Image 1 (cartoon, rainbow, N blue to C red):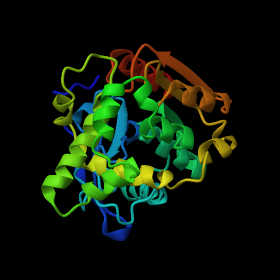
Image 2: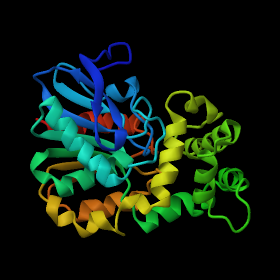
Image 3: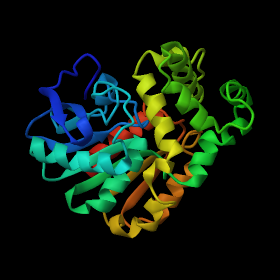
Length: 308
């Protein structure tokens, strides 16, 4: 079992993709192990050593990479040539360059979205899906997260987030405009507030101060790219995943979903599961975070089961 004290990767580097982007990647585990592709959330969050704790390094050969504009990938925070189709194309480039023909895909939140879209378009390269916190990138999910649905549960958090937006302005577009400002103080302030908003209801555990979590990952790239993707409806037609779910219905899939996930409501996981014929749905006493204890245990257990 991986721990944060034993997470050294056996290979690291950058891969050039289209539009002037360079993607940072690491290969972790056993070079002859079961192939797994890890897709981080956000968009924009990047991966870190904590992302490795799910994987037994003797058993798995895991590809980690920071998606376009995310964390250590270059250019940082760039929204140019940064769409869902670009990310799907990048996955093929990464698999080809690193010599992987087929992989299991492990992804949560936005990572579940990208995993599903990739599987729909390239099912022949997917051995199975291990998904957490299902985000279908549809109007329902977008409205819940950023259109005010959160205020039903966290009116104080929504009040802080929305207080910076002038009346008549669209919250996402206003935040994005300011995060892309040449004024670093303005840019940093709005990125911080965007990420603070999400971290305020990220986990089932009591959060004394969300800013403590913000120091553990690349929150500025997350803020910019989340806003960019949400402002563009994730560059997908409405209900693209469910309209194409038949293309992946037989792929071995497991879903881990926190009952108290306020970012990706459980109804989305139930809906996805109902459209698949080879899936298992695990509802946990947890929130959105992959490291909420029941989510973590279920992900590790289901990963071993589905790859056996």
